[in-house]
Amino acid sequence: MAFCPACGKEVTDSDARFCPSCGQRLDGVNRTETPPQPIGPGSPAPDARKRRRRRIVMIAVLAEIPIFVVVFFLAFSGKGCGHTEGSFVSKGQPLGDFTFTPTQCRSGQRMSFFGAILVGDGPTEGGLLVGEDAVKGKFVKLEVPGSCKPPDYEVCTELFIERSYCSVFEAYAKNTNTTVNDIRLVDGHLKLDCVFPEGGSVKADIKFENCN
Image (tube, rainbow, N blue to C red; front, side):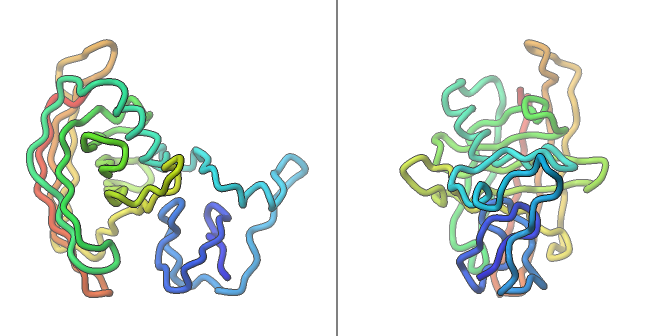
């Protein structure tokens, strides 16, 4: 049995390399270790960490917000004026075989990070966060399409794409000169060519414009 050192959630898959709740790498984690203990009198009890409901945890970068929260928000708020073109293609492990083609985008300003949010038409179609943080630099976070489990679809497979595995890693976003309802529109693109130690690969070539 193992527990994620970042969020404290139990990791039931003994071969997992990433935490299914927060995307933290699990390399080097002791498989028999106990979950992290609370620090200070105001910290939650260990059993509180085992609740199935995922919590929004603000760490160094606000992109730690679970993507399913963003996807559900966009699913009921209309498509806006953003435009996307291109796809994200995964083959083999660790992500699986799928093609994610975003159909809408929004500014990361809505979730308090610099960049863009790319999602499909429905709450189970997956999503991408493409952005930049002062601490972590440029980042790409993926919610694997179809990975959110019923009944509430709050348990999803989400992880960061590690640039060390990529010969091409371009996660570019820029603010435009246009503001709509106090949200600065964002343009940019995502290009990836990555090969993972498990033998799988990822390629992406996506353009996004006027994400609001």
